[in-house]
Amino acid sequence: MSDSSYLLFVGGYLVLLVLMGLFLGKREVGNSDDFMVAGRRLPLLVLVGTLLATWVGGGTVTGSANFIYTYGPFAGLLFFIGAAVG
Image (tube, rainbow, N blue to C red; front, side, top):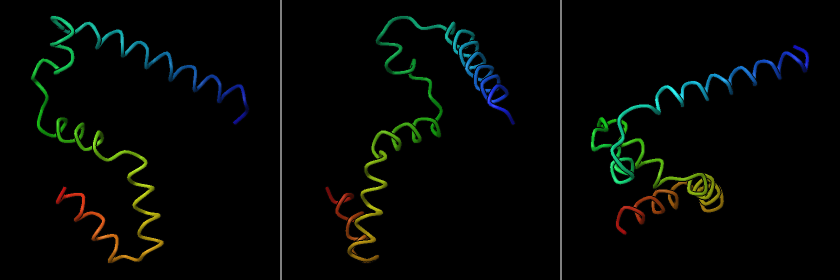
């Protein structure tokens, strides 16, 4: 593919994202408090995914991989057990 077709594809994708945001953004939001808690209507799978993404960031993933590589797999288990214990 040439450079212009890549730009056309990325531009079309961005336009699609903006249109989806405008369309889906018109849903009922009472105020900022309602927005912050998603109207208390999130399905369990979405809620779990959101919390997991909040707790496990990119630094945790790359940091734990580095830790396990440096100290071995058993130390990696201790790393995760320590996080669960607190």
